[in-house]
Image (cartoon, rainbow, N blue to C red; front, side, top):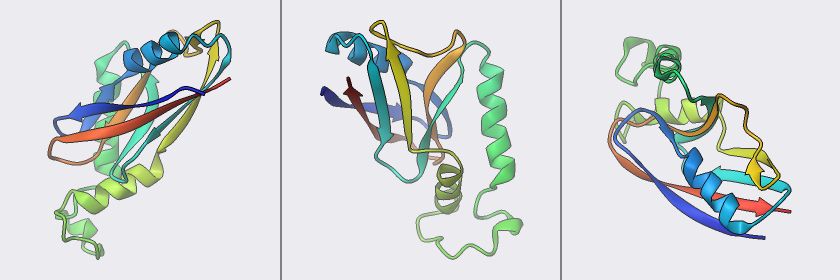
Length: 140
């Protein structure tokens, strides 16, 4: 069962497409059918499958989560206790809890069975740049 870890470099909040890296891993593994499990090893970012054609979709999604869970220095977030790592940290944990840290994607005919307009994204919730570790595991 092939497994690897990739690094997704982020520059701040937003969605970072790493579909090609996942596709390359599946292709190099030579699997015909199976399941790719994608897991991010962090608690302040997450994974999403989202539209990969119109960048406005990604921007709107990011804006929605910022409105849903504002920064910790927003007056509506005064109830937060975990504030030692900055005003973006606890909201990042909440956003990650609302999304997912693991995704399973079927592999069919040696390719990810994503739809025409679907891409695989790391959803960064912190303000500063990070090097995020994503584990890819292929089961046949």
